[in-house]
Length: 134
Image 1: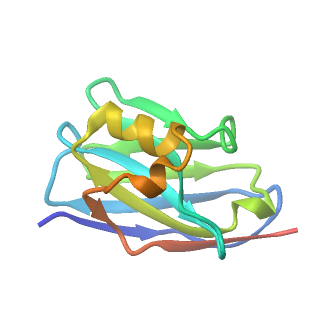
Image 2: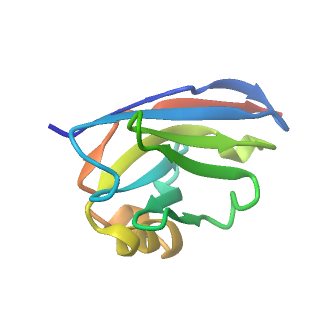
């Protein structure tokens, strides 16, 4: 059974940093690509970062490029999202998700407009809340 459990959310001031973690089980990173999504109140879900193997190819939304970094620890089956220079507009529920679609999945959910909404992602975590105060 595929499972994803997020942690690390919290309240942080603008300009601060957080590292989100996603503990995974039931699959391997060479088969599934992993993405971080977020959804703010009243807004659509958006893909913020994605990583796909082979090659650990990464994708980032324009709004987070240069500030967020997605990474994996294959030995520990963990996925991380390091978030620096946080802004109030980064506030939302952050979800870790896994899909067999590889680089196509990453391209659609992170790069394509509304791709994160239209794509039927295979597996989801329950989310962790990030609140950035101004």
